[in-house]
Length: 161
Image (tube, rainbow, N blue to C red):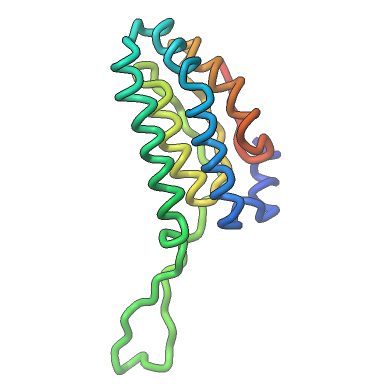
């Protein structure tokens, strides 16, 4: 966990282009490993391909596309209205990431309820530590294998247990 904090402190995740690259890599993870994700969901919960695709994969892809397309507008500072008492002042709301986000996955929708929040955390500029549910062991193993291959391992890690 200390290395994730150090990675965040380096400012690596603050760059908008870095975040977009990571979100595109996350989207590639979904697209290139669709069959593996569906197979893991079937092994863990006997989910049909249709249910698994509709409620897990397609929702993750949609969320990722939305984040990629909206990230630049989300990250912009928002100027606040001023009244005559503070005309010479400048007030803005700046979107600043928290730093390190822990995502504890669920067993019943292991990919969607783990990776959709991860998408938001990446878009916000945070480092992420994921702890998937041990009950959905096949899904957890797929996440633990694929996330370091597609995303920056200095910023995004999976722990099993």
